[in-house]
View 1 (cartoon, helix red, strand yellow):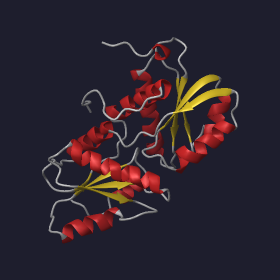
View 2: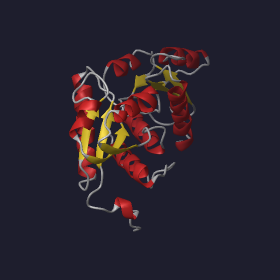
View 3: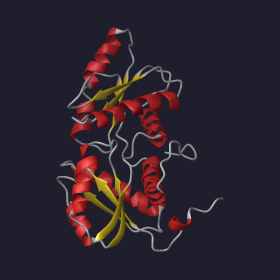
Length: 252
């Protein structure tokens, strides 16, 4: 097995700071904590901390104030929207005591396609059953919405038996999941699944179940692929690279 680059093979590796969005939903917070614990178990060589951009403590500025030395911030976010482009850099500008790098957002990535496919299967969906509506949170940032659309295409290409994957947005953009489901029904599809492109349970996940689909799968949650992807984004940030494909299909 090839050894990692030299700067990734040091005992004094930078801290991995996982930066989550934050939610008022207690289950959503618990899922984020569990995901971070999975990353710790996967990478015992690293110090892994977590913080939240909104609603939950510790906040990003609080977490940065407690850290010293080298840090890699890994956004637990599915697209490169306002939080990645503005909020995180502004917080880092107020923490000059740190030597920090910011990893890419988690999505789009084939590991997420694997997780979405497994969540659909868990809900009783097979790839040939009919079209899938990918329900992203949605954003006023067109780049973030474009990332969700790219994820829909990636999911379809990654799993060719899927008839179609239609991107939709739960706020700030269209179509909504309900509109996408209605349009597919008007085309004659009787079985349609909604796949929430969301990290955790919460308000948006509950809204995605109201789209009128045959079934709705669970959010990505603590799927093994997410922990692998967080670790991968950390390594990419240190190496100055970006990967398009994971090394292998991950288990659930």
